[in-house]
Image 1 (cartoon, rainbow, N blue to C red):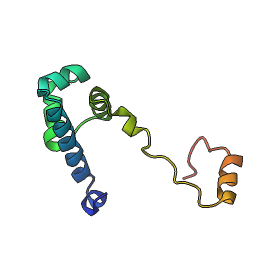
Image 2 (spheres, rainbow, N blue to C red; image 1 turned 60 degrees about the vertical axis):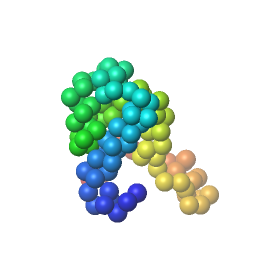
Image 3 (cartoon, rainbow, N blue to C red; image 1 turned 180 degrees about the horizontal axis):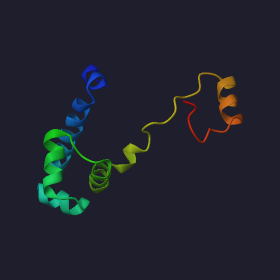
Length: 101
């Protein structure tokens, strides 16, 4: 992850939109084609490709249409345990249903 993306999430969103556009073009699809396959409006897709602004639902629909939905599976996974003791503690303790603060 680039430093700019760590400071400005918008930069990461713009980059993601640009990647979608590149994938669409490499598939030889017009924007209309991808929008239809994803079930989103062409205007929303255009906004996403140009500015990175999109709903999570739109991003997931587009990823599915491009055959890349599985790449989202690893997002927001907890970090790996650093030791056997930490792993055992995690397994023994159920996750709370709500936060404490």
